[in-house]
Image (cartoon, rainbow, N blue to C red; front, side):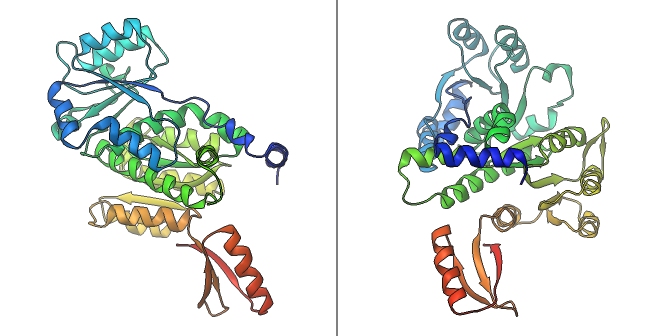
Length: 365
């Protein structure tokens, strides 16, 4: 245990839950959503957006849900921004006379530190987006709408984690999952699923005796998901937060030294293994021949065209990130018992020790 960990546990035992007050200090409270009446209608078809987001926050014991203000055009957005500051701007592609690219440029001129995210709801638009083009340089990232309001929660948490990861890892030893994916379509599926599963499993670990306020404080200590799109971005994140990384989930084909490389993900994992990485690793690809390379590296592999892709990704999270039950096994590997909480673990362990059985513990689902 190093000095940083000793200091963390000293503060935790001295100040108790107050340590959680210091986490997630910067949050998204006000969102400006720029969408046409048609897009707004599409959102409403899937249920009232604000109500769904509020429901997600309440269900997951998160703090107060952000307020969403909607305007139908980029012109109206700029007029509103003259008199009111927002924490996050989300814009659709078709917003009237001003393009989302010109809107993002003007937003950054007014508020340089306010993130602007582009949300696509037409599949053809995804193929037309070139993140390296000059018109995209004022847009912080691009997501695609798949009919599920969880994408909005995911976008908010994506921004909040970028804001807070440096401080929260330092003062709270908060853990990190690195997601490397350049496909807008795929990371718009993976990112919400990762968050939903991490939040759900973190909630599962919270003591049932805690009141709602303390539960929300504990949720601030959940692992953060850091999304990146290139080899260089992934290396930078890993080098900065490697002592906190608990999992790496990576595509295989993406940008390496400025060009799309068919084995960028393989190169990434080899680089990390040379530096003695010690965490679960999952490689994903739509090219089945990459499975052999992944297995040779000793890492997990998922085929992107699999019908069970999202379920398999969910199982990887549960089984490999330490969220599962503690399973007591005999020397021959047979399950003897299992514990679903720390209190349950202590009781079961005492029972096993009383019976003088030799056991092995496996944290699995």
